[in-house]
Image (cartoon, rainbow, N blue to C red; front, top):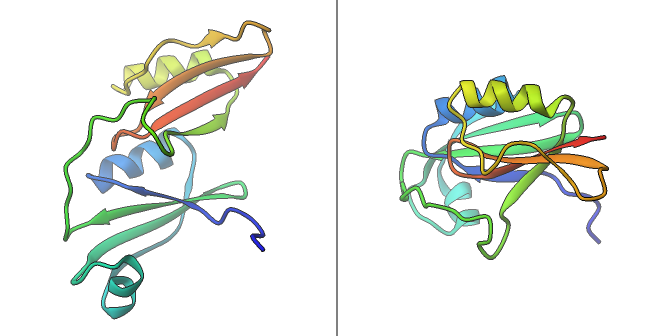
Length: 141
């Protein structure tokens, strides 16, 4: 029986940029960082000779894991919000307009500016993390 979601893994292309985004802009704190290689990680991921830096980060009781493969690099894909499978992470925020302005000033790409829902209950905007993951920011009205 599943008890809870443990974390969300995000493969990144440039760890420094992703740490800046998730730590400095989104407020996550680094919980554990390590370089991983060897039989265990090869076996559980089904790839041989892996070298990966993993960074577990927490925000309240939520955890994400950034994975930067120094071996087995893949191309950075141009992701679409309508791709099949997981497409975004959603976060409840305060003062979405201020966050939007700050993120834009820091070169973070948005699909659109913050927009109120038809029922007026929330204001929503989607931006992109450095590795292309869509981030949904939601402010309760």
